[in-house]
Image 1 (cartoon, rainbow, N blue to C red):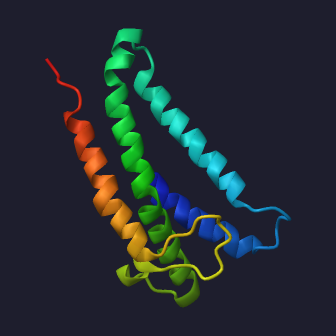
Image 2 (cartoon, rainbow, N blue to C red; image 1 turned 60 degrees about the vertical axis):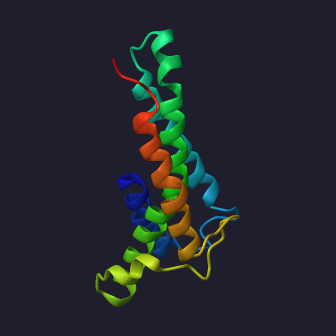
Length: 138
């Protein structure tokens, strides 16, 4: 979740410095590649040094965590973006800006604050909690 928040802040800085006209293509392609690489790195670090049997045992837990992270990402990412955007624009940090929704977003899928919150509460948290109990540890 920290990565999502920091990415939101870094994307605001990038956008504020370069603007939406810096590329002729949708910049979200780069953002999505970056997120996929972070996911591969996280999953790879979990499985590093494990035997095949252990990997198969851990797979349900990893799937739960991955689904939970996917459903929670937008809440933290856009919250971080909103905080950075409003700090840059108004010079103040206030948690009410966490609910900021961009009016100029070029992403193919863009969720408003309520949708992001419901995805986080109803899907993100339950998947992450479920991941704690998927594998029986002896």
